[in-house]
Image 1 (tube, rainbow, N blue to C red):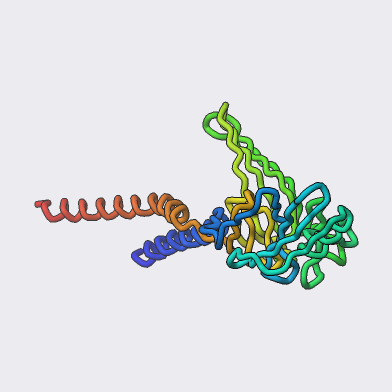
Image 2 (image 1 turned 45 degrees about the horizontal axis):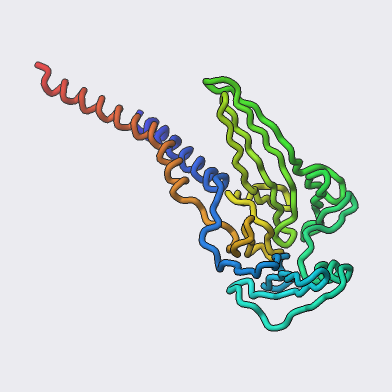
Length: 272
């Protein structure tokens, strides 16, 4: 009987560790401190990362047609020597295509990207990840769930916007969560980074960045104010809080059983 009890306790704490690993992966993470803050000029707009280089590209507008492309080190933010000056609008668009990493390409299923091993294709217009050869759907966006709470129905709708990120190894799914309980409503948003191979979740970000570098090591925040390192930092305080809440019933049960056992021993010692 003693070993049965110990086995049950071991199984219970094993489940606690397993749930903790799931929370480690599922809980949204923070970008942390930026590598540097972006100090752009008044009429300067950030475009993205240069292909295959740790270089940021921005465009400075002077006049109606005058465009100046400027380059910054993606690790320090320091301006690099050399600028590209373009005076024609059509040439400006062609220059952007050459200087900045493309966000999408094309597959035989439509506009999108193909994974590095060529086995899966991310189709943008249908928001699906498909096997390249067979067309079998591996992942599909736009899911809706409904729960019933103590104060009435709770609606949770998740609208997804699929975009290629991370050198065609990962793709991001913008998740908009709508919680409604009575008259109270909140709509937090997260970015789930999934594998291009089988759509498994790699990590989830609390903030949706403006753009990520193709090598998957850097991103620009949604406000375009700073450059951050990837992957994001785990929110250990939130993880510890969740684990403490989950461990509380086990700790209270252990304390109650211990108190009952000591009480029985005390009554047995005082019995005539």
